[in-house]
Length: 260
Image (cartoon, rainbow, N blue to C red; front, top):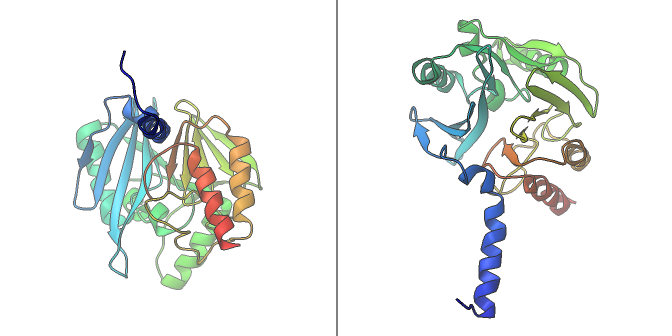
């Protein structure tokens, strides 16, 4: 029988805890990342489900990535958050055309910032609706008026705090203000996956990120509502950073405590 010293057992136990967050992802053969353009990557997470990731350089020279999803449905592909910008979204649509060979029939955005709706014009050229809450639509219209830029979005529901909206295989949930006043999360029960958008943070990019439109005082309460609404999360996709599990909600709450 193989024996281990106590320090080695402690190390192995710690490694097993770290691996738990990756179990859902690493136990399937879909981990290979495809670089489909200089800015855009795609990674299959499960049958019928892909992560898309856009890399952009910020004004300070830092490289930053944004996550979204592609969901296969009987009608076609749903894009959950656009790629970050017009041209990355064009590249993503081209990859879907050539590799998945299924039509993109709709898109949903989790809030009104460019890393979520920046590909709206590329979708509009293909007559693909980009659906949002009424609150997000109003904020996008207000912002684009000042920038003299029309972003075509379609308001489909007016959600109150802690209200859900069932949209076929995807459930919309408005937890309350956080990263923005309009941020929602999307629940995919088939995969026990939550697309947390920018309401949820990940360690790759420490800190709260862009808080220009944030409600930092309300944000912790919104995260707690997400925890209460979805206690069975197995995969959590943050707006930026690495995919993990429900522990990202606790991590995000910990960041809020540091700001108090």
